Image (cartoon, rainbow, N blue to C red; front, side):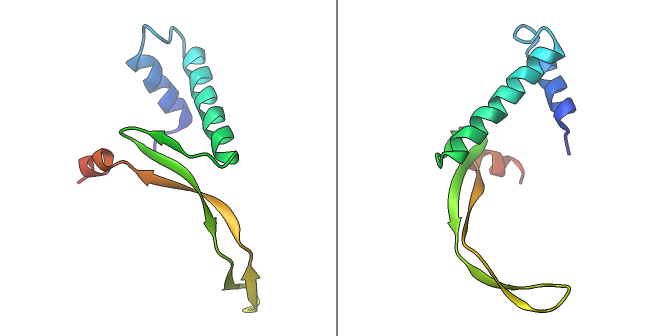
Length: 94
């Protein structure tokens, strides 16, 4: 799996005319992540053509089991982030 440092380095190498330093590429990466997190936290979806889309979904309450005690517990309903892979990207993996 590619790490953040490897990804930032690849961004810098792929776009040398845009990112003159690794620090510039890292700032762009951090800004992208902050914008994505802010949009998702407000309940908005984010669509990245060719990559996929992030959306917020409501997970229903359900029963679960404590693995240490075996006791049945209720897991409350919650919101979660869902990522759907774009068709072009998933087709490229086959």
